[in-house]
Image (cartoon, rainbow, N blue to C red; front, side, top):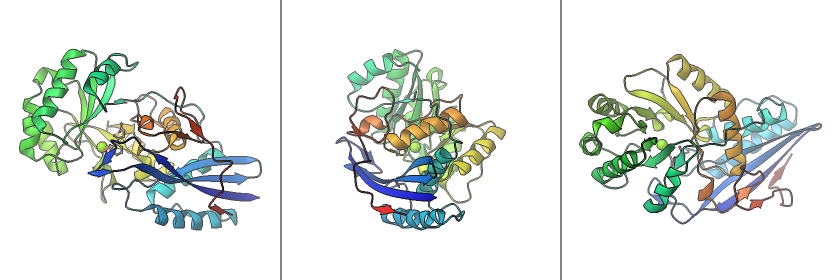
Length: 322
Ligand SMILES: O=C(O)CCC(=O)C1=CC=C[C@@H](O)[C@@H]1C(=O)O
Ligand SMILES: [Mg+2]
């Protein structure tokens, strides 16, 4: 017999989390549990405000509709809402044993907070790869900070993310502050400019490699090799099911592009599943999952070695059962 439950969660975030100009104080989402006989699978459905097109009430409605038909024994089609399709596909993949247990719990270190502490942290990394946001301040300041870090730490590789914030001129100002000999240690710069065409011109002009993040989620996006483009940054909560992720990865591999599985600030439950997907589907690539420390506690499952408190779900009332 099939049964399902849904819980709602809200996890306080550290004070400084800003997403697309919005300060968000807590991360909210749903947790789903599927049971079929003695098998069980869990998933997280957590649309990200400012990034997902669906909101939490819409995701909840769609999840309840899907679960109702699943419990009745029907094979319901994947939800059109990416966060719902992703969370349900994780629960199904745990239930039927297709999602392997082993995870890749190493991530590109997210550069947040005090620059002095950052320096010490980057010096001690097991894998010298870090991710830094740019485009929030003056581009020359960003370029100087990038140069400073790359000069001081000769093994460091940087992934940068501008979230489409620069005009071509601002992007040039950034590049001028980074010496040509340092540029090859920028593994990629995600979406430097407002349009993909401007980003490609920037890469051709500066020899700085770029990656697509926002573009992957735009209607009509086709995975294609382009000069200067090295990677696709994929956030499955924003793109959809595991099946869709596998299709993206296969297409990217055929075009010689790397796929970096990345967080949409999921709880430790969703993040550990992303670490398992990364280990399974992109074993050669360091994922971008260093977001757990933005939260004040873990949820349901532990991220290995995290000292954050764990909150259980079992003793809480489900908001829906079927
Ligand atoms: O990609 C990573 O390494 C971590 C995740 C990350 O940087 C982001 C997650 C969610 C929203 C954004 O603020 C940001 C991004 O734009 O990629
Ligand atoms: Mg990005």
